[in-house]
Image 1 (cartoon, rainbow, N blue to C red):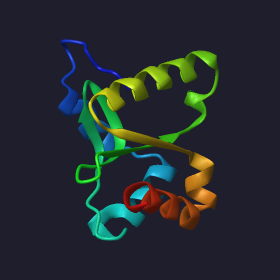
Image 2 (spheres, helix red, strand yellow):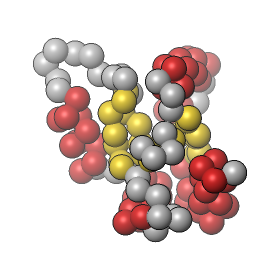
Image 3 (cartoon, one colour):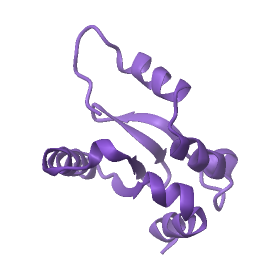
Length: 119
């Protein structure tokens, strides 16, 4: 999400997101934290260019977004496309998965993340 309001610091928003992850975020974080995926270090709820990405690997410049129902619809897809374009302009690759992908197909998803980084 984008946060440019003067009354809310991005750090406080990041902290709130970290305290209240979705089920899919908890599952994926358990699989990524502590360099569990091929020794890659991920951060969660990381701010970049005024946005907060769900997961970020600095060494690979890779952002992982987990999309729930709020990402459905034409307007939401347009916002996501603009967000992706901004992040890519900063040299960050963005990959997206749905909550259902994380919950039901985690091994395939982890393989897809590793392929994005290592080819």
